[in-house]
Image (cartoon, rainbow over all chains, first blue to last red; front, side):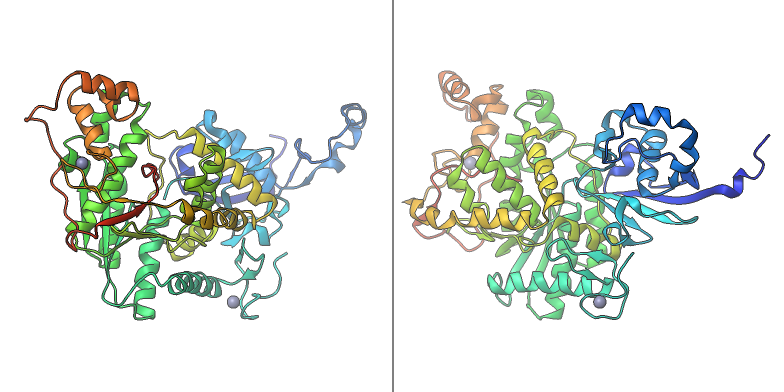
Length: 135
Length: 361
Ligand SMILES: [Zn+2]
Ligand SMILES: [Zn+2]
């Protein structure tokens, strides 16, 4: 009731799964997810932050948010969309996709787009395809 | 930020970073280089002759689906003059192979290639489902591997083909090299990197995707919107291969050339293997006529064990002794149909590694 404008501050992202990954996501290939424009800094950032210093700078949290990127999308999918929790490791580990999972952002190899640090725009299409299943 | 233009044509927007070279290329250039590299692999190894009848071992999965598509494309583009067939083995695994065979049947329509499906049930009288309910999930991959290998040869003989091509890609081969190293199996190490294997008494088999990276195969299928099936076999938690695969993917993430480097390492053992080749009198299975290094081929031994309720007869020495102790095979024993190569009997000398062929998929 306090945030009537929040609907305009969400990103709608079209997510597709393929190569068998859809099995981990309710057997659905296509999902639409809503994400906020900014998210908290990633807990799995490469530089380990000192827990004491981070707890003493609570007032600075607003500045510490980052624009929602593909890493945030991966975290969100893993925490909120994944249905087969026992096999979460087949999708993501250590804050990124598991090696062998290909990612395309708007039909382009994510390695050309900055991988996890690509900042999402409303309406972006992100595909995750596993290469690990037999051929 | 994507670079302005494709490294090859300098015109279009790149859509892929090639794992082999790091080049950033556009969709059309990607299709062209992928296909051309497979063509180069085929022509450098002189895999085919005009008029050859070639069966594509088709599982409905990504590799064989892309292989069928690319073989058809190259056959037309470069006038190979091949008669192409799809050959599928139905192991009889409910919820896995039955679904993937539906994909192969659609491929048959899409690529207009004749399709032959040969089932374990018609050949051996046992589906994998029945085998697993008899023996459990412990050695079922041994049965499946031996039965599939022979079934492919028999299917190929039925089609009177000269040659079977399979979708094994560079990642698969590197993975097998790693596994052979970890098992200390040096004899098999060089052999597993060969693009083409042909004992004089077997149908020629080759791997046109030997140098094709899995990433590019999957990307090719994605951009061409090819129809493939992807589910893990429900009976094969091949843990060892799984670990090798994860290890390889981690290596590749750190250095993409790792895959080709490992294949080259395996190839370096090839020379040694030439020396190890033994010449031995050609032998065929006394019961079914399939090539064998013993009186009975591996499939006949496994089948007899199943039929007589001593399933480990073809697995362990203990099982073998148990079978021998229980007397000779009864006349009523189920037999695999007699096998004949389409080209008639082979030459008198077979060149083959001493070891029994592994149940490699
Ligand atoms: Zn180009
Ligand atoms: Zn036999």
